[in-house]
Length: 147
Length: 71
Image (cartoon, rainbow over all chains, first blue to last red):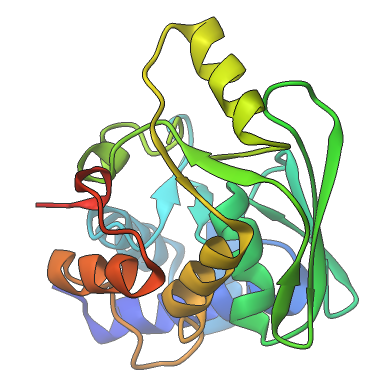
């Protein structure tokens, strides 16, 4: 069950990611919220258990704060004058959506590798292609990194 | 979830991996899905959608096949 600490931490993560293009580390979250690092780390575990964020499998850092990726991916997004990474094409389009801003996604065809670009302008999407999900929805969280 | 230049490219990708074709959507559907899913996530009152709410979003965008069911 989400606590007020979790709500504070969640908002800080997403506000920072939106404002800077960088998903904050636990240390930055602690510094920005005035919470102890231990409290932040415990909150991050609860948020991950609730599937609000995804933690790195090898460290206490955040891997995904969907739609934002904490690490470079094949889905680069330019929006509101900043550069971001989305975790997938859904998340990449989620970045202009969460910002309420125009932007574009740079990616490539999953088959042939040809560069592809998807634009969001004036609230409408522009581009040609197809989005494909290999994993059925009920299995997305079995391996969210693969999904 | 990946981008492809065309349905043919999706078929080739699935064929090379020996996996069945999954679910596809247009860019317009992906954009509408992204807006419905993430448009309010910076609000303090945001909360994760229930499976029922999520399925309602998928249906509204036109994703009605069994592939998109969560339950």
